Structure formats: structure tokens, C-alpha cells
Image (cartoon, rainbow, N blue to C red):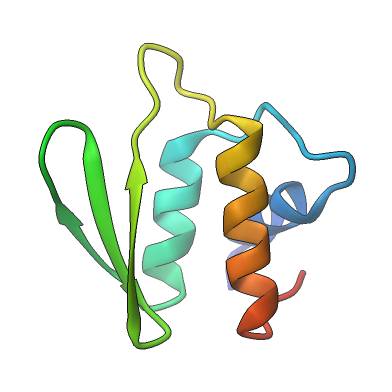
Length: 84
């Protein structure tokens, strides 16, 4: 895993939850982990990873992901053994 993706993963697992994780970095991490990312309605995307599909909302106008989404992604990663 590249250093940039590792840094994003560390930000996701940082406590307290970080509110400054760029969504584009999270999407790139999904792809690095082998996910298939598909466009959905509006600003939603579908992420097929670990044999399941999760739907996320791209943040706008800010490029930063909200804390609730970061916590949700962390919990999803933890349940599948993805740790920094």
C-alpha cells in the first residue's frame, strides 16, 4: 500500500474522529483495497468491497468527509480486519 493510502487509513482510525479527511482520498483508498466504485443517483456512490455494497454520499461543497461517515467507514474496515 502506498504511503498516501496508509496516511488516509491512519486518519480514518484517528481518535477522536477527524473531520478533515478528504473524500477523494477515501475513494482512492477504496480502489486500492480492491473496491469497485459506481456512480449512483445524485452525489451518491456505491462501493463494492468485502463482498458487500455500501452506499456513501459524496460531500459537497466541502471536499472533507463528515465525522459520521468517517466513523462508519472505520467500523466497516474494523469488521473486516483492515487496520493501519
